[in-house]
Image 1: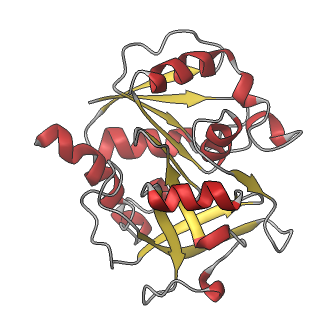
Image 2: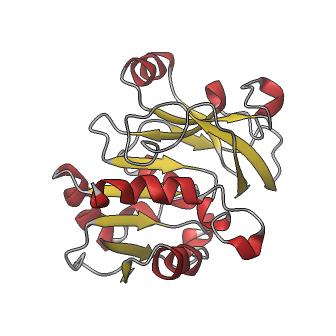
Image 3: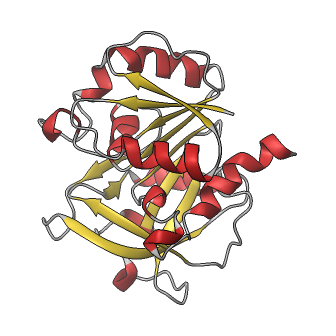
Length: 230
């Protein structure tokens, strides 16, 4: 499978996910500069974490207008797979490729910590191989990760099975105390209605190597690659 990782000015998790894809998962990866207009025939586009354009205006608000996003939007409209992690999720939301918005954390503080989340559906490329009751320990690092949307959109998201992950505790309980940033309904990840664009705030690429003493994030990468092996 050929992955394309988009690099914006301020991206800082691009090499993390490239390392996991190339050295751990054995996949082909190309680096896509934000001013490019060519996705180089990739099968899957990833928008990595970081602080694109210094998070000025709003996180992701400027990167959303980078030239390559025209290609990413067209790619997604044709059914291509797109995954945004942390700042990448914020960019997807700004571009209207996934529902909702990412607001300032309820604490108004930047949070860098290990949290737990669990999959809410098996009906997505990111979660198809993950046990629904399995809590995954995944790091977060963000100041604007508070997912919000209006009541009608939230109703539609639940009805359409678009919530991929919710924050939980180590036992898998979804509760206000397990919510690190105030996200509506403990939402940690979502997809679009066509189920080919995915956004999540936690960083599975930072929990995918034995040297880090945490490989819970591998479950997501293995889910993505499972359809290639099928």
